[in-house]
Image (cartoon, rainbow, N blue to C red; front, side, top):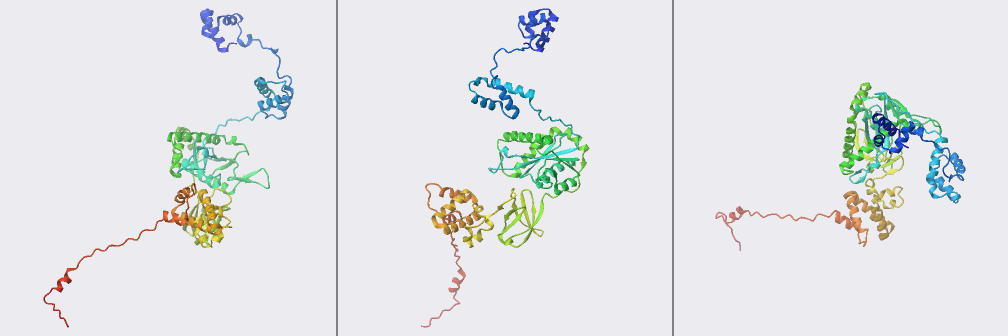
Length: 499
């Protein structure tokens, strides 16, 4: 059967020339077919008779009623899986070549009797009305910092009307990362919208009552929105399509970053600051083509308040006798000189700043989880060397193995010196690592803990990595003093000898 376009071309050419052969060639059909349609004067849909009868036996006649019933009970069944199930139970009624026929029949059945699918309604966003915020996992970009995998998320803000977007690096979907990401985006714009749309993340909402489905905004999140004059809005639970602009922009942003990483020819960055600069360049280039619509949005937005909220939480804690503090359910080790002190802690998204009054004492990397203890062996190693017996049943002993090489070194030392002697030697190894660095120790251990397993000791490692300076002999140059010698030869000096 020819197409509508071919039929219209045939009729127009024939009316212009009256030549069947030329008209058929220009319409892309044979002369016989062209004459057939010219004589009938009917388009293909009317001329082509529809079949109301079968031209061959139905190969699915025996099993189709059962298949139809199973599809009605389980609409998510795939055609191929159902075909294999029925074929196994009725090998005489089906053959492998019937698979395509079965798939087409299942598709037609679903088109006629299947359930309705969800309808999505495209939205026209009013300029300057709303900003959408969401987090997206950026680990798939395979970025490394100084050769080490960099696990992180992106807190992504998008204006739906102009599609202007901005993103900040973060470790988790926390209120701190939300506060930092939102403020960074708003101050980049210089103005603020009327609404903030966000999903039902625990950073913004919490459950109401015991086990209910309702959620309301956290007090701190509501305070953040109030400061910037934003009306918070959430989407339906498990309905990410309601924040469709930012959800779609998440994929677009990561795709652009992949392309720029390919152009850069490397996914490794010297530091987090270099990676952040790369991220900003990608965002700025993506926003260049949105300036015209962004101007319209900015004209409809309101000015920001003069002050910016702090991007940290402030907590107070005491240093316990184990030389640890507990911040937001996570324990951290600190130097033992702080035991018994009351400290103020500024909790940032990536770090903790410990203060005594206004004096900054220490900065610690923050643990991204909500449980556990983060122990720095440098804080306790001197005290463990004075009490080595405490190591065997120390609650946080596993954190005193900085890497697998150190764990293997401990096992080797215990096998060689016994439990107590091996523990003491291992603590001395940790002490050496705190002085020269773990990387130097691991390089040496790589040779000692692999075949042919040469004999070694912590003392030998110390002599290699911290050789004692050789004593230097100070050579004093002799300067003769001639005047005293001249005095001996002076004729005025008389020397008497008493025999």
